Length: 139
Image 1 (tube, rainbow, N blue to C red):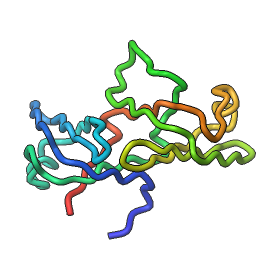
Image 2 (cartoon, one colour):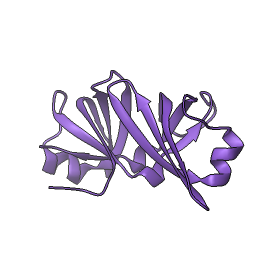
Image 3 (tube, rainbow, N blue to C red):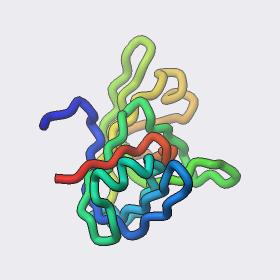
Image 4 (tube, rainbow, N blue to C red):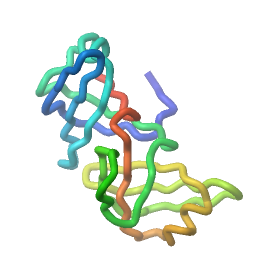
């Protein structure tokens, strides 16, 4: 299956914590970073997720926010460090490619935000991803 979701990050499930309707699933990405996904219990069961399961974390580029440093006091579970390798500025929006250990992410942010953050190729950034915006897929 081919998807339009640019961010497809391979990893291994390290923990599944079920709740009443949803579960949090912790994934160790191939680059060593930890990512948390909040998905339905039904999805956990249908995918057969358990520690050791190989998965691909899927995140739309519009769901990746960027910061120039680690940010405390946020409910956003996933903060992945990286370096800007490509910055494409349009009239209103910008596409930012971020190299991280084990791969890369793409973020779609406003041109104004890219300017306010002072982004340039080589900038160190933190990709911020809410756990509810991470989907998981198995092979």
